[in-house]
Length: 305
Image (tube, rainbow, N blue to C red; front, side, top):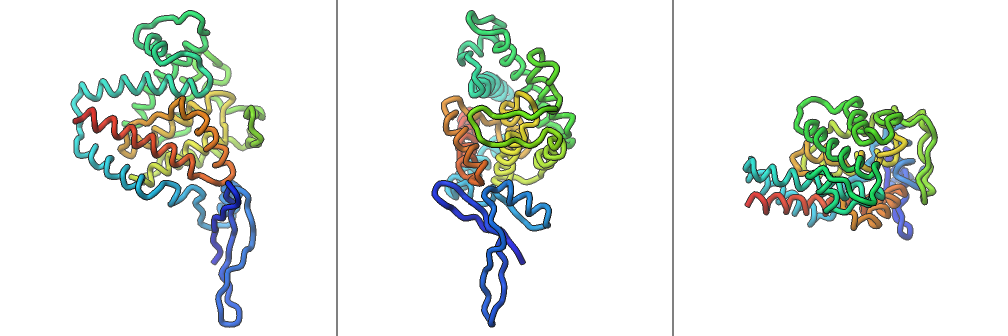
């Protein structure tokens, strides 16, 4: 039976398709194919019915995984949290995530200015109308995210398109909630994005992952996959990064995790981790997200205490 084996060369990973063969009474392993990335190995595996998990077990350190599970169990034991505590946490998350997610994409509003825009309805001198709309739209998208996370029905393509439409509302109404119909490129990256005609089919894997029922670390790894695949497919002309981080949270929240924030200060490490994932090494991205998940668990446990 053929199987995949991950190998490391320098700072990147590649994949071997290996088959065990018996020769002269002995079993040896024969390499059938080499794949430079998890994407190519995964595509081959899917088309040939071979099991493969490019971002599978081991991407998160055992000690960190144990700590996350213990803290998630601790938070579960404290639930339901008092309504006032939930309200404060919700308001903090809305402002913090809106600021950080937009700042990663280049929005110049500071954390304080984001709070003033969202809580006081103020206009910040020197900042563009688009930057203000990015803040108010993102906060509205979080509200929709929470409704989707709290529901019991399947996450559908229409629901995700609606979430994207909110992100770009009044900013780019022509593309808000519609898959791209052109080839786009990521500035500063050599990565070739999928042809736009393939986007609807490729996004099916994201929707499938969003509806996965796995819990614990499996859910965390599923959220990593949701995030990465959304960024890799790049289904929209704009708003892909913000949508990917919201969908990551949708998967986490449906599995009982509190919402998690990837922070502006992690921007360089975040982009580096995405580039390494493009080459098949999911460990940096998985660890980055896992550490932020742990921070969110700590915040919620402390607030509940």
